[in-house]
Length: 298
Length: 237
Ligand SMILES: Nc1ncnc2c1ncn2[C@@H]1O[C@H](COP(=O)(O)OP(=O)(O)OP(=O)(O)O)[C@@H](O)[C@H]1O
Ligand SMILES: [Mg+2]
Image (cartoon, rainbow over all chains, first blue to last red; front, side, top):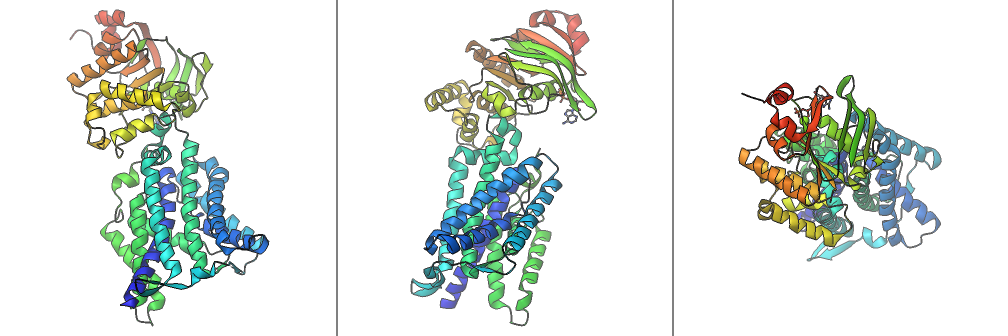
């Protein structure tokens, strides 16, 4: 029984992590039609911020967590301001190439100016322990991650439904020109979307780093790939789809990890992608995507 | 209030608007008529800044707004209800109206305006929490107009507000426009429904192939079967 509960919370936390990352990708995509492949670098930068802060002036590892999130938010906003704004009206492929460019520049800058080898990132020791929860021993990181995901998604829903900025983001995803006709600054809406995506990436980064305990220049690649797959699975452009896609992907991975015989366990990701591919043949628009959501841009 | 001099709009090599000069005085309703493809939508879109002006000058309240971005033009009090209504289908009526007022800093006046427009368009009050996609075409047009009014414009351009609507609804919308005129709003109305539009407009411009081919008092144009026939193909049957 304890094993089942442990695997369930594991699946929720991995799924939550993917959901956070996928939501960040989806919120930018839905507004700008841009797949931000530099999204993974937000995690990397958050990690390096923790490393440098710990190495210089921050003694208490708890303080490193907000530093990570804040760094990701600021970095996302800088990406928008410096890299994506100049190509905003260019064809979609230009945006995509710009995203790859940002990603490559950051990875190489870190390789050249810091190091290729992983750097340790201290996290509060209680995060790495286990806690007793309803009589079961569960890892603290996973419980926190699940909780943080739920809170972040709830916060996002509130933002999108209760604030003018959130409303404008939802409206801009459908018809940006008319949002501007309401007098709403396009720049603010887009910057807001990047800030939100940075916040979600920063939050995911905290947990990714708590698990790995180290940061390296290329660590953003796998998470962004998973988030991308989650978005495609859920239906690109749909926020609900991104969250659902992330959750399903995480659960799928954990279930396969737990049930595959050890000699094929190495093929877990291949099997996951095969299943995702099959799901897309069955529903080409993704689980929750609709034609309108995918193609209804002017 | 609004003045265009020699305005052109190009899409690549296509010249949609060729050197149009036009004036709208404060408190007027001016009709902009013309056949399909004449360049009416292109013209009003360029005035409000959603397509770039390729040549000429646009001034609003004496200020050059030719290169001002959309948001800035709306902030100066000039807005447009676009062709095809374009309400935010996934959002509720309430949310659509809230977005219209998103940049206003005067909550008291905003609330007052909201109540005024809900009284003016009772159907919106009835459907206040419903998704805009569930509204009929006429109701969506009313929502589009109310949404534009929520930004407290001093001048409103309407691009074919009667498009695809039943005659009874069209009459209602034109009545509402006269009401808005009484409360001091200046309007430029793009219409295909020429004779009806002329009935409530002060002056009219006729556009054909991107150029102004007629300008004058609305009643002169409406009264002349010859003119109507020549420019709009809608005179004596
Ligand atoms: N985005 C665009 N790209 C290229 N050509 C365009 C574009 N929009 C309009 N045009 C062309 O410009 C010309 C004028 O179009 P416009 O939509 O302004 O006419 P209109 O008078 O509003 O017509 P309608 O009464 O059908 O709405 C047409 O020939 C049209 O094909
Ligand atoms: Mg038109």
